[in-house]
Length: 473
Image 1 (cartoon, rainbow, N blue to C red):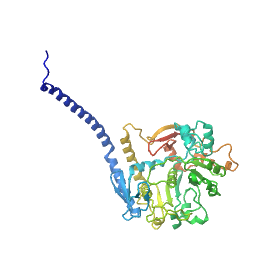
Image 2: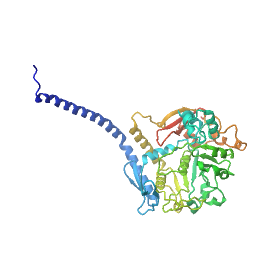
Image 3: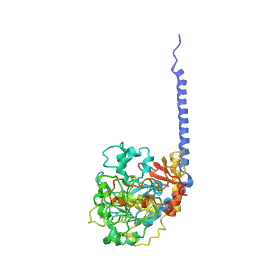
């Protein structure tokens, strides 16, 4: 008969199990430490951190010089906080949280510079090649841009094409760096405090918002030049009279096409397109910000006018309407000031009009380029060791299309007689050699690839379409 083991006899086996568990845990910890330490070491490359930290210092100094009391507090090589001085009039009460607008806002400069430098290479107008290249382009996405479809998808593609054709170019009608200097003119009542009209008209292209009138009454304040207009859905009914006398002014619809817009389009000869921008969660929103996105995608220098960015402004007004009470958009002001100090825009306003604008305290394109390269390497190392490098590293979907200027011109067979005079060909079949030299060079540097945003506010969700370079060279 076998004798039962004493407790002391079972103890060695128990101890062995504990030791084995400890050894296993140490091995797992070592493996995790190896990978995480390796990633962290790779992420915090000393040279890149130094470049970004130096850039942060430049941004901090720029905000101090140009922000009228706004200051930048650096957290690390990427993050900073923009603070308004104590006593700033924060009058807007958030109805959801029952709190007043705060006096400080946190931003990630690395993400911001990646996003906005990306916009310099983007196409921001919806095109046929985008819908063809995107996996769900015609079936799902196209339906989201047609309000009057009455269906969740484009199972009836013929109907969807008929509804989109009047505003659907085959290829991008506008190109990165097509213009040297562009003016984006907002609608703020601040414009009446200045006489920027002649200065605005001196730009290569002028972009205006919604129903802003352009006439002799306001000419000294807002100018008379009319090239592009970004409109929201609610402006359709008044757009015919607004565009009257300006047949070449390009109308870009911010949201979706719908019945009101269709009726309006049939009554005007102006080229009309759909905006291909994405709703991004940023500190500044609205049509004005979308106009900046549109401008940056085709202009080297973007000057903004009529944006409420100066401190002490207490009314939310338009230059062509009666004053109405509003709030101090502090977060928007902070974000626009950050964009100026990232070299994205140049702000013109009543308080800034009183001082010389030499822009020497804004980081140079060379410094911005180095910071962008460092931020790109930082992001790549944080994502994956095996991520694609180079200028097409964010391309998740690829497509192919014909040469520049090929394919059908926007329009439908049943256009009205007035609509048939629409000068789409001015942009859509423009000879490549007629583009500005810098735009031609950029096209070649990008190897004939057009970049489009796909969804959300991610940096790595691009649809990229190749065009043959042989015909252009």
